[in-house]
Length: 161
Ligand SMILES: CC(C)(COP(=O)(O)OP(=O)(O)OC[C@H]1O[C@@H](n2cnc3c(N)ncnc32)[C@H](O)[C@@H]1OP(=O)(O)O)[C@@H](O)C(=O)NCCC(=O)NCCSC(=O)Cc1ccccc1
Image (cartoon, rainbow, N blue to C red; front, side, top):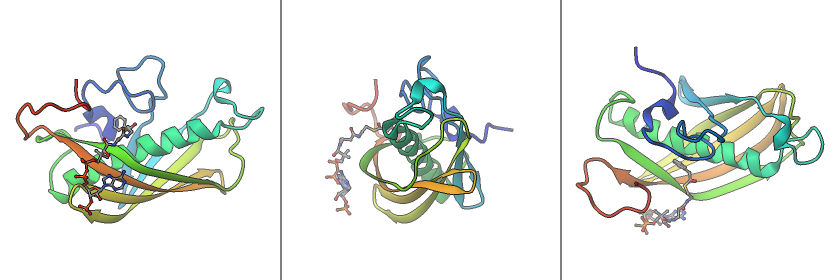
């Protein structure tokens, strides 16, 4: 069986938030639960904003990366094909609008839940929530734009090495 984690199908990804090829990164992992994309991530002390609370920038980063992976996985799903099938698509963040609702404790697993709200051309719009136990600590509106398809032959592309 192939890995259900979206990020395991982004070969060579050096991203700080989601890249398996970044030793210092956050290494988030996202997967489907029905039509919702889930990510459960454990923070560490070094990601403090205020003492014992997660930095808003780090929270934004994991929301961002979770949604870019979700956009990719959703595109494959829309084409009725597996995560490891070609052509490979990559998405970049067009809009990331995060509303911080409550402080996010650093010592409790953080659950991200992303839902697709619109698909239009190369653009996928998502709503994402961050939860700490039963508390919703943030919600975000995110737009991902497809910036790479392996079906397009070797066009110059700043998003790919
Ligand atoms: C590529 C693009 C986002 C869009 O340019 P183009 O390709 O020329 O787009 P084009 O003009 O052809 O429009 C097509 C459609 O899209 C719409 N639309 C366009 N822009 C926006 C917008 N901003 N927001 C909303 N919508 C927008 C536009 O209206 C049109 O829609 P329509 O068909 O009329 O309904 C460009 O602005 C850019 O490079 N920005 C920097 C991105 C960046 O650096 N992000 C951070 C790094 S990524 C990261 O960190 C995560 C990560 C890490 C690792 C792994 C994976 C993920």
